[in-house]
Length: 94
Image 1 (cartoon, helix red, strand yellow):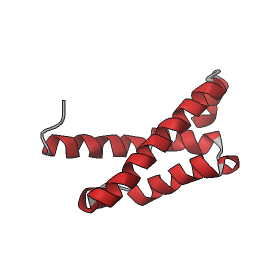
Image 2 (cartoon, rainbow, N blue to C red; image 1 turned 30 degrees about the vertical axis):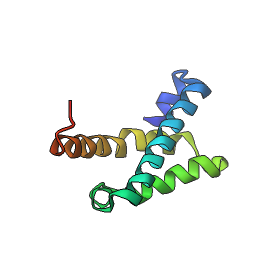
Image 3 (tube, one colour; image 1 turned 90 degrees about the vertical axis):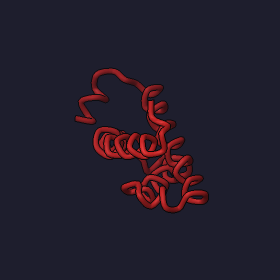
């Protein structure tokens, strides 16, 4: 599926935007790990998300588009659901 997305003309700018979002998510989780360890621990693969952020930010040559899109279509769905639940439990969900 990821390769199919690449073939429909998303382009380099789109790829960079997706990668930037993953970097921001990883940075947010990194900060959360230092301030709210219980919440951080409750998020599936939180440490791996930070590691992926570091890979994107510091070792760009090791990243392939299929890996990025694979995460976007699988792990990101889980993360979104978990964050929505955390916000709802805190009374912050919209």
